[in-house]
Each structure stands twice: as C-alpha cells, then as structure tokens.
Image 1 (tube, rainbow over the protein chains, first blue to last red):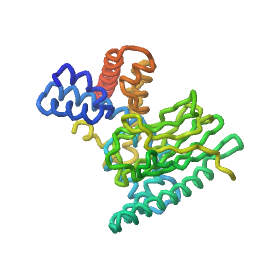
Image 2: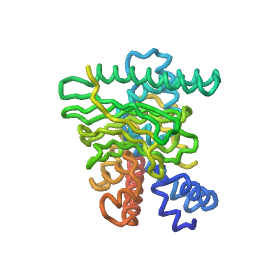
Image 3: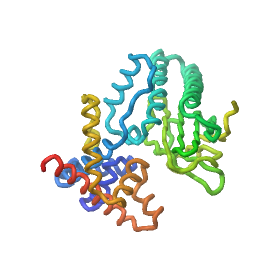
Length: 255
Length: 84
C-alpha cells in the first residue's frame, strides 16, 4: 500500500474495523512511514477518547472480593478493545459475571484433560453459566409482564464443532438486551464473525461482530440495543464468508 | 501497536476514570449531531465505512473523509481543553 491508500484506511484502522489482512498491510506501511504513523497516532488518540466516553463498568454486587479484583485486573490489562468499551453498564455487569465463570474454565483447561473431556467440561460450564445468567436476568431486569426473557440454544451448523446460548431480554420502555456465549468453534473459522438476530423475514439486526476468539475458541457478546427485538425468532452466527456457523431458535422462557 | 498502547483504565483509580470520561464527553460536545452519530455507528456499533456507505447510500470515500474529519476534530477539541 502507498501513503494514499493507507491514509484512506487509517480512521478504520484506529477503530479496529479493518480485516486482519488490511490491518497487516497498513501496519507494514506504518513501520516505515513516519508521516502516516503520526496520522495513525492522532486517530488512535481520537479512538481512545471515544472509548473513554463509554459508561464506567462496575462488577455486579455480591461477588466475592477476590473475583471482583480479578475481573478488575483483567479489564485493566486489556487495551481499550471496542467490545469491552461498547457494552453498556448493565450489559457489562452481566458480561463480568460470564467472565467470572470463565475463570473456572481456565482451571479446567490447566488440567489438560483429554480433548473430549475438555469439551464436555466446556459444554457443562457453558450450561451452568447460562442457568446462572438467566437467573440473574430474571432477578434484576424483569419487572413487569411486558418484560420478556427469551433464550436460544446455539447449535453448530454443517456438522462442525461448537455450541452456545443466547438470551434476548425485551423490555417495555427500556433498551432491549442481548447476551450470547459461544465456545469450541472450528479452529479454521473465517473471522470476523457476525452475530445476527432475525425474524426470518424482514427484520435482521446485527448485534455484534467478533474479531478474535478467546481461549475457549468462543466469544461473549453483550449488547443493549435501541432496536425492538420483540419479533426476532432466530440467533445466527455467521463467518466472514456468510456461512452460518451457529444458529438457534429463540423461544420465550416459560416460568 | 498504535491502537493497543492506550490502556485507559490501567493503573488509574475510579476517580481518574470519571474525570477522563468527563473530559472526553466535553470534547464530544464540539461535534455536530451528524458527526457524533457517525462516530458512534463506527465505534460502538462496529460498522465499517463500507457498511455505513451502503446503509445510507452515500459514496464510500465520503464516509471515510467524514470519519477522519470527525475524529481529528474530536482530538483537537480535547487538546484545546487541556491547553486553553
């Protein structure tokens, strides 16, 4: 890439919106061009400012101090990733709960059980986290008959590995909330992934984009949205080429 | 890595984080509504310039130019606040 082409990509570079290939090409140029590097640094400052405008994140009350501290540490260590910054306070407190469950997963991984057993453990963890998350959503965010919690079990498509779950909380007079956890995705899955909610016809809402998988080869998505999610019926995770990787039907949870 | 060297919340206590947030929000005030909306779609919703251009039916180059202009304006506003 020459300077002109690089400059065109720099705003998105600063916001981590480029594909990994574009990003590498830009980075290669920046390594040798001081003028473009200066521009990239200025834009990165602007991007960091945007990150600072996000609501401050508080871990949920009632967690043991030790776990709260470790969540704080992991968040402080993490650079201003968009995923972390875009979540709102409510959604972030839920994400923190999931992160805490993730600490348990680390212990499972450290034992290096054989692959099948690891998978079973991960699936079991995911299930337990889902149950805990549902309970938390019910306790904290459902305040009337118009607040509806729906869920989906995400199953791998095309016979591949992987699974997950999704919750959709639709609330009267407040932003709707989605929470999703996926794990064990194929190692060669084409990134970035896109997370969609759809009614199968007209409504299709992009609720997230996933650029990197975490250590469980999965991801968490927590998002509050101004879009009314009342009519969505399916949660679909697609890879960069548009193939469905995970999908599940969203159904209202019975009481 | 340029964008990875800004650990906003690292090593700062909560009060600093709140002050930084206030300063950033003040800098945002210099932007027009259209500029704020554009930045929010890119930064918080993760829309690429191409996606924005397709959604709004405006040329890709225009979106990129506007993105850059809004970001530079935001940074400038923040610098001006620091050194009045």
